Structure formats: structure tokens, C-alpha cells
Image 1: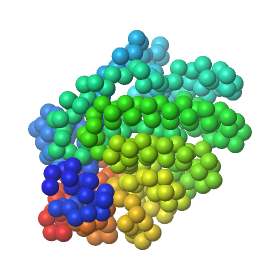
Image 2 (image 1 turned 60 degrees about the horizontal axis):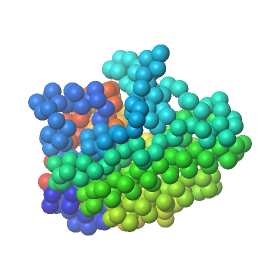
Image 3 (image 1 turned 90 degrees about the vertical axis):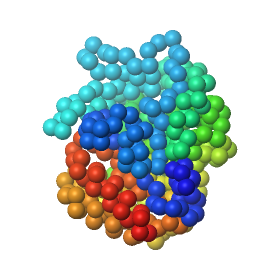
Image 4 (image 1 turned 120 degrees about the horizontal axis):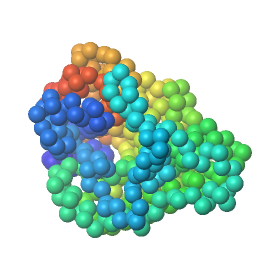
Length: 358
């Protein structure tokens, strides 16, 4: 099996030759790993780690053709991008981290004024060169990411204000949700049409969970967000593309709704969040959805020893793994600067070792 075949078999709960795995890391961690392995490209790094999926965002993107910059700098040094997101770089003890720093619509309470905001448009992109560029990664399961129906509205409105909107200003909330959902439907429709048969997974990322509960009660999730998640699932499936839904935190009470909407892969199985233990999820949803992630990025990877990392890999492979199971093992989040290189190596070495014996 090549990487693509392995991942798609796991998503469909079919026989694989080994456990598929995935990898995501921030820039600081990538630079460390490039040096550790003596490689220069992201593809070479994925090959060193035996990763089966390539997320093409930032690797193979459509060409920017709008008559203004994709990102521009403000007087205070922060940046604003075409999505309307303000970001600034913060220095931490582990290295620089880019964070969202301001919310352009947080003080606007007039829907007509909000409608004047420059929301993103698919016409700003040219997808015509992507198909040729993707041929370099045709051995991998190719994932297109970036879709959001909840988190991106919060990044122009502010989380607290947007959550209040759901009850106090529902028309504002609906307008913001639809503005981003419409854009992502148009954007990925254009991408899939330009790259027929080449993209395997659409990743929707919306963090609906806290450590111990959902941020939004189930009925509001169903009313405001689930219809747009279903739209994206239907769009992807019409092009033969599987759907991964990412949400950190405790989202157990949404999982059956996500399955019903058409989600194929649940990411990331944050194991320390309430209700998200791999044993519990397997008991409730085995065979109905493919699991992705599960290796703890809150405690084990940043503060544990290599032996503790290996122990968690073994436990989760015993629970979820096997050649006929819907499981793609990976860190439970993008690896941050506080994760030590030796723990990353231990993670992927142990996956390799166990894959040889399952």
C-alpha cells in the first residue's frame, strides 16, 4: 500500500498493511526537526517520520490574484489578513508564537455595518496551477484544510461577543456564520473542481470544546452550525473527498450529530478532555467514524519522558489500533514549541515498532 491507499482504507475501516499516522507542527518545531534529520523540505520530513497525510495548506495553495495584498502590516506591527484576522507574534520561553490579537468587528452592533465588512471571496484566488503542483505528493493522502463555520466568525467578532450574539443578536451570528461558510463552500468547490481526484480529505476545524464540556449547548450547535457542516460534507462527498472534523476539547455530545452530518474522521481525540478517553469513544462509536489523533499534547508530549510517550502510544494502539480499525494515530494537536524533539522521535519510533507487529 502507498500512503494514500493506507489512509483511505483506514477511513473506510478496511484492511491496512500498517497503522497510518499523521504529523503537524508549528514552525519552531519544524525547524528543529529539519536540523535533527538533516532535511530541507517538508516532504522529506514527512518521509522521515513515515507520515501518511500531507496537509497542503501553506505547501500547495491557489495563486493570490486580488488587487491588494493577502496580508498587510498595521502601525503597531500586527498584521491583518484577507480573512479579516489580526495577528501578532508573542515571544515565549520556548520561542515565538503567532497569536490572534484583535477583533475588527467586536464593537460593531449594527448588522448593516457588518455587511459592509470585506469578507473573503473565491474570486481572489486562481486554482489553475494546483493540479500540477499536487503531483509531487500523489503518494500521500492529500488533505485540504482551512474550512470553518464557527471559529472564524469568532476571530473577527471576538469569542465572548460572538457567543453572546447566538442568544442576544442571532441575526448577526447567522450572518457571520453564513459569510464564512459560503466562502469556504465556494473556495473548496473551486479547488476540488480544479484538482479532480487528487484531494482525499477536507478538514474542517472548529474548536467547540472546553476541557470539561462543550462551549455551546447541543441545540444551538444543531441550529446554527450543523447545517453548514452538512453543506461542506455534501460538497466534499460529491467530489469523492472524505471529511475530517477537528475540535479540541470535550465534544462527546456532538459526535453523533457530526456522524449524521457526514463527517468521516474525528480529530483529535484530546484524551484528557471529559468524555474523550479512547476506550469510551471506541465503545460508543467504533465502526461509525474513523478516529484521528489521541496522543496527548497537554501533558505527555511537552512534559513527559520518551518512555512515557512510548507507553501512551502502546496503550492507544492497543485500544484503537489494528489493521482493520478506523484509526489514524497522531498528536492530539499541532506540536508546539514546548514539545521536546526526543519525545517526537519516541512517538514516531514507537508507532513504527508497533506497526511491524500488529
